[in-house]
Length: 150
Image (tube, rainbow, N blue to C red; front, side, top):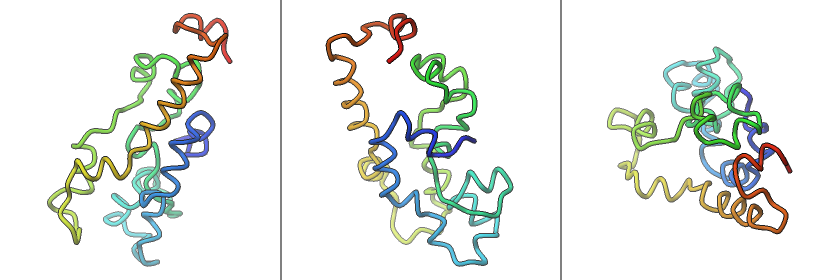
């Protein structure tokens, strides 16, 4: 795990949206004794629970996209296929249902379509990156981006 600060470097808008959302504060919804319970941490702070840490922080980028140690370097992230080979995972409705499924103690029914709209941190981030890629002098191909990094 590299932590959400490492993701912020390249994905500032996605980080901002995540940081202002409920996933970033999921562990804070737990009472102090619950922050030590694996049953609670498996959803409210999955990264820390998997790493065996007691310092519960919340649901981070790596909770949904996989541990970033190998795919986090910019040279890997520039190539979507390579990033996936190095462990980047795309979030799916099934990955959400791990915590928001029928057996989770939720007060409201879980609607995957509405939930994905509420946590949409990729649309604005992709638009910003697409705009910067179309600026004069920007690399036009994957190979060019490797040869001439920004």
